[in-house]
Image (cartoon, rainbow, N blue to C red; front, side, top):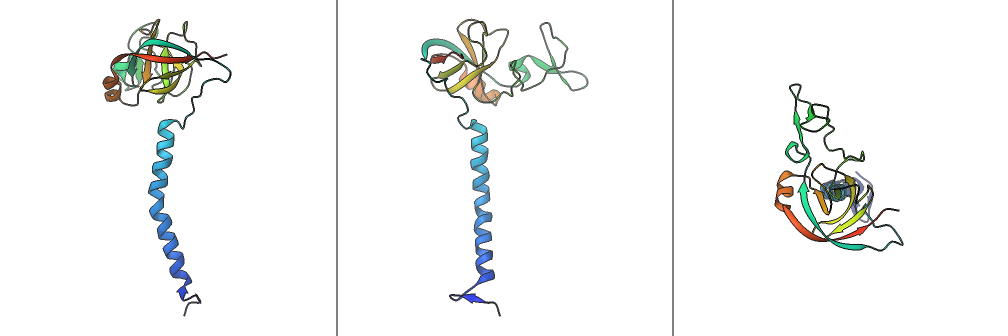
Length: 167
């Protein structure tokens, strides 16, 4: 019937290998999803720069309208709720520096911590200043979380933060 090698039918071996690969695909998808969700260690401190350690007030925020000051208008489009841009279109999930917000995105007073400043926050991990907010001034930073619940659970904490200034 089928040509055999050492007593095993070739089509049978192909089917077994195929089924083994099919069982591995969900695990591969989980690994890829985990790397995408964590950012795959994309934030690193600049070389040849010493870190400055500070005690900084940290709060959490997410992309929701409550945290970011937007609502949907009658056309169901997101718009700013206050400030000079009140009523204008809002790009949800896009930071002030133009990047997509993700875990590791930090909102800060850009007069004190310019865009690109790398920080390591005890209990949160590494992040980069890519956003700003009207209520974020002085020694206060806002840490991005993907869900409102996580942002609320973080709450308001004073943490030791290592700061590496860009350039």
